[in-house]
Length: 413
Image (tube, helix red, strand yellow):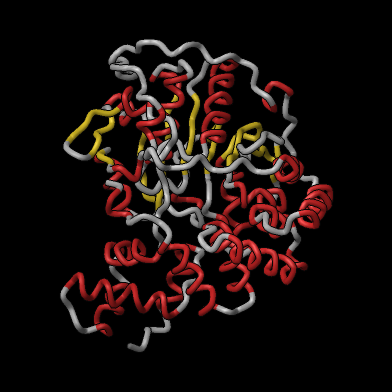
């Protein structure tokens, strides 16, 4: 099958993603099978004008990876930040989750804010994604087992009710989240008349080249109050700091503010104590039902706890989060001289190296993948380096490897 040469530029212009031709071709063939069609040329012409069909094809190219209370440190910091901000100003706090995929992240924000004692009137979450089918699943609020991979599943007892082998989210939580279709590369599709206090944009920038990252981050800055909070993925901190943001140095939260903002100490380290969980009125959150299940029920009995990272690696991550890249690099190289089997150290080293040292970063990523072939962030980062170097076929293969280690999206909702 010969691809329409207009398709790859269309995908890139709308999403920022550089998709290899072989990956795009496989997605088109799958859609043809699903639609029981055989005329690829007619189908490709339809994609150029049919927004709905483009969205269905995009879902095959970008596989969402999300679950409730993923990256709990970032969620906790965002909730405490919002709690303190509301206590100081008395006005409702506005939060944005982008991209929101099938809804797990924005709903997690709403649950976390209820848990720290904010009433329904004190906050509103806006959730944006480019993919309308994902938004439809999010609005349904019905989730399968892959959405519940957090170690502590107490939130499921508080906010969900069982429906067969799935769980339905309480209406009181769903009412706090407004879903909209939008594109991070189109600022107009994200504006709704007011700035946000908190923005979560996690694990999207890794798919973009540096120029597109800069464009996306400038849009995020335009949506955010000058003293607002931005949370990105841990592998995106360096990019954000290159494009106008400064790290708050909060361990494992990947939290930033605009570089020009004068941040008070209280914002850097929120000190308002979280009140005990309380029974909420029906308008806020459902009343607790039963104590959270023992942790042994939250994970399979034979699932070993993940090994703790070495202290030196944790210290290097803190230095990187604080923008002290040279010190982090020195610490990582010292760690790797002692033990070259630390995949996390190779990966972090690749992240903090500047663009002009891309060859070193690529070697570090390949070493990380040699040690841990299923290291998802390393696969994504290496794919991006290959794309920047014009090796699109290799980049496509790496993204397909990353896609294969993720659960099927259809089990989520």
